[in-house]
Length: 115
Image 1 (cartoon, rainbow, N blue to C red):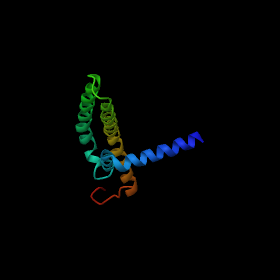
Image 2 (image 1 turned 90 degrees about the horizontal axis):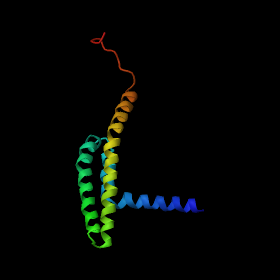
Image 3 (image 1 turned 30 degrees about the horizontal axis):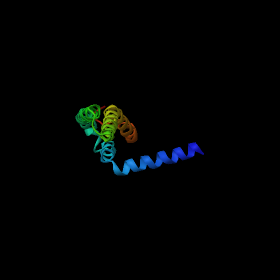
């Protein structure tokens, strides 16, 4: 019963995050055929941005600021990790799609020029 409820809660949380977090829309687009070439450049740009934002929010908390600064800190950490995974997974996804397309085309046909 506990596992079933935890799986249901996790599914609902993932659905909520996919629907309402704009960076998830960007990540989903980066894994499409049109967005795949942009995956590594976008991740290379956004990982340091979110990392620095996280450091700023962490400094606010450590300087005795409001405890609510933990919320934007967690948001920055999650997005930094999300785009780090995009940077790591994009080259593998690109190679996989190239191989899949080559297999779907079948064996290369020999032409007269190649003979």
